[in-house]
Every structure is written in C-alpha cells, then in structure tokens.
Image (cartoon, rainbow over all chains, first blue to last red; front, side, top):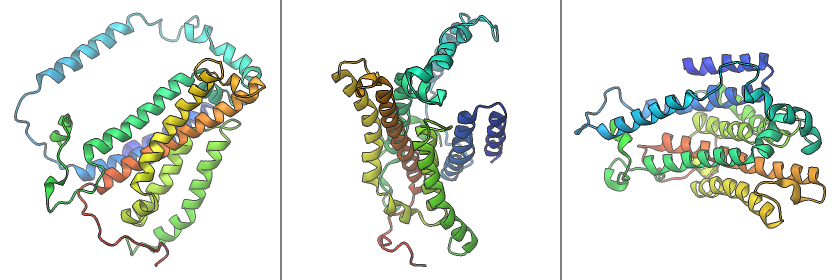
Length: 164
Length: 151
C-alpha cells in the first residue's frame, strides 16, 4: 500500500520534471497494477516461512558471483554526472535534432523506443512475455482443485515456490 | 461483492472510459506521451478492476484463457514479424524505412505495428498474471455465468 502511494507521488515528481512518459508508466504500473499484484501475492502466502529441508549453497554462490561481477563492471563507468560523459555527447543530441526528419514523429521518446532502440524494446516485450509464461508455468494456468491437490504437479525448477 | 453497490456502479461507468483511454494512449503515442507499454498496462487495469469488483469467474468468461495465451504470443510475434518483414524487404532487422515508399511513412507504419505488438503482449501478460494469482486455490465453478447484466 505504501509503495503504491510512493509510486503515485514519484509519478507526480516525474510530471514536474517533464518526463511525462515515465510518469505515465509509474502511475499505471507502480501505483496501479503492481500494488494489486503485491496484494494478490500477499493473499497467497502465509506469515510463516516453510523450513527448507536442505541448505541452498549454490544459489548463494551464484548470487555472490553475479553481484561481484556487476560491482566490478561499475569500475569502468564514467564519473557520475560529468558533462563530458558519453550519454551527453554521443547520440542524444542526434535524436533531439534529427528524429523529426528521420522518423517524422513529434514524440522523441516514442521514436527512440520503437525505432532507434527497436531491438531493446523487442527484448523488453519478450521479457514481459516470459514473465507471463513463467507465472503460468509456476502457479498453474488451470484451476487447482483443493479437493485433490495432485491435479497440478509442481513443475521441476519451481524451487522458489517452496519457500512460501 | 454483492453489497458494494457504489463500487459496482462507479466501476461500471469507469471501465469503458479506462479501456477507451488505453486505446487513446496506444494509438496517440506518436504525438503525445504514452505508447504500447503504458496502454497495455492501462487496458489490463480495466480488466483487473472488473475482476476485483465483479467476479473473477465472470472476468475469466469475458477473457478466456485460450485468448490470453494466443494474444500474449501474438504480440511478440507481431513485433518480431515486423522485423522479419523488414529483412525480407531488403532492410536491416527492424529498420522500418523499407516498409513503405517514403522512409518516414515506413517509420510510421513500423512504429504503429510494433507499439501494437507491445500493447497486446503487455495487456494480456498482465491479465494472465493477475488471473493466475487470483485463481490459485479456487475450485473451478461448475456454472459459468452466461449473462453479464443479471443484477
């Protein structure tokens, strides 16, 4: 509930900073849908965690290695907020000045998202698709009948579900 | 939720407006703020509100599971298909210039189709996730409601 209010407030903040597209997303996703999903997930879970029978060392190692690699990667990043950073020099001025002629669409955000960075957006769409498929696979697309709980056998690889 | 008549009446008025606004955001994304992703989420929010206020079984009857499965894949296929068509017409993958005689017309058409694909996938993915969450642990109701305006 608090995160929903927070999202709504930050959506207002984005409007103030003239990032209307981001504000749109924040209000719809952050304040609206994800709050509902959060409440739905809370309704599914209980307050007690089920004890796992074996220790899971491998996931911990994977998480640590991934985190260490990401932190190592930040060492190569340019200094925060400097004016000569590539993000201010490279393609942004081109997008702002040329997208009107090249794409012919007034909204620069849309032309960057859908045309210049079309490949990224394809990846994002696939991520959303994968999220839906994953939820259906893990939680079972069919109705589960509590009378015979074996109607939907747990899918292999659904280990995180056991923690609920 | 039979007793909350204020909620029911207000959402009955609001849901068509939400869906209409989602379509506006979808198809006006070139000129104003918005685009496929936002439109998809708003469109899904309309159905989620319907399922919350009325009944989940009714909502599942309005949007059946097979339709969700088909549509969630259709959006991604539409997006990727535009890219493949660009390839077949002699351009690079997702280079919309070749879609029409004029490069900017091709860009318009490509962005329109791509945003439509994003919107379809996002909307149906959100509805799928919500339905799956909400229907977990519920027995399947034997009688599927056949009339929506029975109250």
